[in-house]
Length: 148
Image 1 (spheres, rainbow, N blue to C red):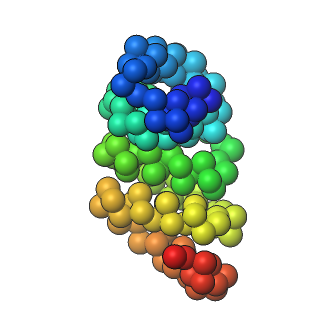
Image 2: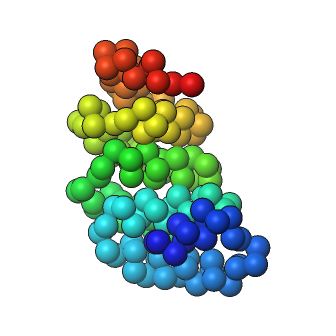
Image 3: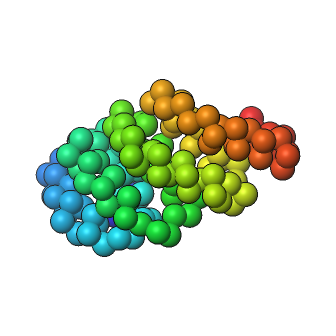
């Protein structure tokens, strides 16, 4: 997960196609069975960032994420961003993550709220309860003052 993240951050794609293919296979084998939501989220983010988000890999990442219990807000935001950026819509995953976001909405910072709402909107996923909770939270906490 970390190697994929670094490659994506450095925008290394075309000169490392074989490495990305190997990372995809390794992610499917290791990361999806690790149960570590941060690794799943980082992997999805990296592949989406460089435009190599294969449906099969993202399906496996979604299935693995559905079994995770430790879901920090920034990793929820990064995972839904990656799915939206790559056009990989997974309704069961988005429903589960919306539920977790609603349960822990006060832990979301400005960027996580923004990325999460953007992802749902980008994929035309209308989760009214999530949007209502985030809207109320953004006003109540005055997070809106920090949006640019």
